Length: 156
Image 1 (cartoon, rainbow, N blue to C red):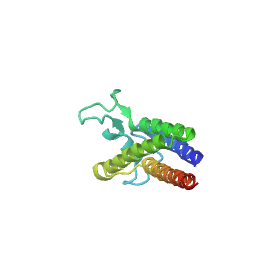
Image 2: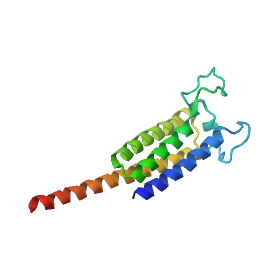
Image 3: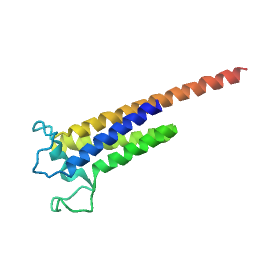
Image 4: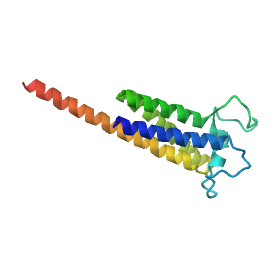
C-alpha cells in the first residue's frame, strides 16, 4: 500500500509541475489545457489566487514576493511520498488531510470565484483524495490487525 501511495504522490508531483509550467508561461499564449471557456488552466494559473499570498488587484502580476501555489503542491506531494515510503502512517494521514483541504479550498476558488476550472488542479484534487482514502483505509486495517492481535494475546 505504501508503494501505491508513493506512486500516486509522484503522479501528483508531475501534475503540479505541469501546472507550474503553465503558471510561468506567457499569459498571451494559449496553454495546452485551454479546452473550453470553463476549462482554462491558463486563466486559473495566472489569476491572483495562483500565488500565496494572493495578489491584490493593484499589484503587478510579475511581483516576485509571492510563491506559486503549484510549488506547495510539489512540496506537499514530496512530503507525502517520503512519509509513505518511511511507513509513517499517522504523519502521512495528516499530510493527506492538509493536502486534501488545500486542494478543496482551491477547487472552491475555481468554482465560485474564478468560475473556471484547471484540468491539472482537478487531477491533483483526485490524486490527493485517493491518497487520503488509501491512507485512511490502511490506518483502519492496521488498527484492526493490532486489535485482533491483542485479543489473541489477551485470551491466552
